[in-house]
Length: 124
Image 1 (cartoon, rainbow, N blue to C red):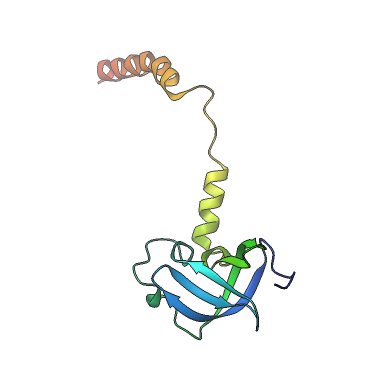
Image 2 (cartoon, rainbow, N blue to C red):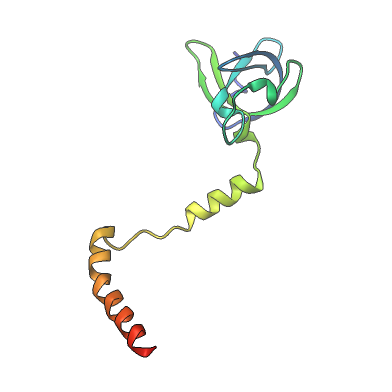
């Protein structure tokens, strides 16, 4: 197996076969990898043939290389940086961690909320 395929590399390949569990992609004359059905696209994939066909040229990211078995795991969706994927990454990066566990925070805030509610009801 050529040394040029390592985790994280994005390469061009050709779909050579499709099974119910994934698509086989030839990376060069002697190297082939598998794109598991879960790595085709974000969302549910019922039939891989709705997304790929034999002979398609695809960009894939190498997820893992098993030197002992010679197997290469590939991802079609990880090679595509879509605006939705990027927005999700950014959103998850900005989520603040709570200062304490959620139950203590709610317990502490409950009295404040009750007081605010009572104040709003008397103001009407």
